[in-house]
Image (cartoon, rainbow, N blue to C red; front, top):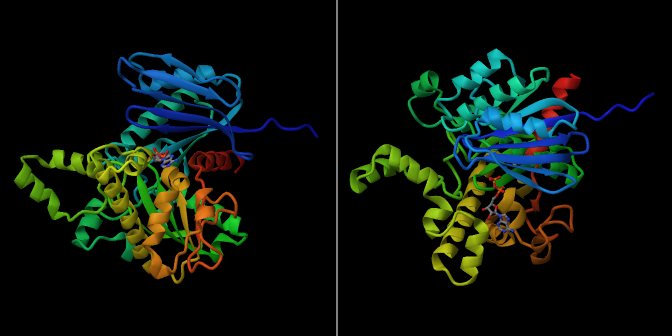
Length: 397
Ligand code: ADP
C-alpha cells in the first residue's frame, strides 16, 4: 500500500482591505505557509509570506485587488498540493447552521446576508469569487462565524422588540466567533478528559473583538454578541452594550449624525475610547503599570463587564463546569484573567497566581486552585484549523 500525499487546505480570511491566508495540513494542524495581503487597492499594497521553514518575504504590490492578491499568493503556493479551499465567512444569517460547499446558490445566500454584515460579507464574497476563479477545480467550503450559535433557543436569540421585525427584517441575535467558541469548548473537554456533551461551560474569546458563549453539552445556548458584533462585552474599539437611547442623545447633543455615532461606537470606543491611548491590551497594561489612570480604568471596565457577561450567560446553564479564556488577550493576559475572576467571587473563583502566570500550561489549562469553586482554564484557539478540517471533510465525504 503506497502512502498518500497529505491533503492540504488553503484557508482564506478575506476582509475589505486585507486577505489573510494559510496552507494547513488538517490532520496534524501543521501550518506550511501563511501570509497576509494588506492595504489592498491602495498604492501601499503589500504581500507578506511566511513559510514554516524559511524567511518571511514582503513584496510591495501597488493597487493590488483581491483577485490580484490571490494570483500573487497562488504563484507562491506552487510547491504545495492543495485539496480544498476553506473560506471564513462572517454572517450566515439563518441560512447556515453548519459549513457548506460553495456553489452559486450558497453564494447567493451569503450575498443575501450582506444587509446583516455590510462591512464583512461583501469582502468575503469578493474573496470567494476570486479564489474560485484562481482554483476552479478545487472544492470551496464556507465556514461561518454565526453557524455555531444557530442552536440558541428563541428566548435567547430574540430581542424584546415587535415580533414583525424578526419576521420581516431578520432582526435577532446571531452571535459571532462561533468557530472559536466551538473549537475551544471541544478542546477544553479533551483537556479535561470528558466528552463535550457531558459538560456545561462558558468560553470567552478575547481578541480585538470579544465575545463570550454559553456552551451546553457542546451546543451554543447563548452568546454576548447580537445582530452585529457590536453587542455585549467591551472590545478594542467597540463599546459593547450601551443604552440604545445613547445614539439619539449623541445625535441631538454633539452635532454628530447617526453614521458618525455608529462609527464612534464601533471604531472609537472600547479600550481605545476609555484610555484615549490604544486599543491594544499590551500597550494598556504597560501604561497602567507606569501609573496611567485611564489605561487602568479601561482594563478595569473591560474585566468587570466580562465578569458580568459571564454571570449573565450562566442563566442559560444548569451548572458551570468551566470558564475558558481564549484569543490574544484571553491566552496571554494573566492580569485580565485575574481581575475578571476577582469579580466572580459569587462563584467562589480562586485564582492560582502560579498557574495563571504560565497561562495554564502547567495543569492542562487550569488557572484556578484545586479547591476553587469555579474551574477556569486557558485554551488557545485555532480558527484556521477548524476551517481546514471543515473543508477537508467535504473532500472525504
Ligand atoms: P484578533 O481578534 O485580531 O485575532 P488577537 O486574538 O490576536 O486579535 O488579540 C489581539 C489582542 O491580544 C490585543 O489587544 C493584544 O494586545 C492582546 N495581546 C496579545 N498578546 C498579549 C499579551 N502578552 N498580554 C496582553 N495582551 C496581549
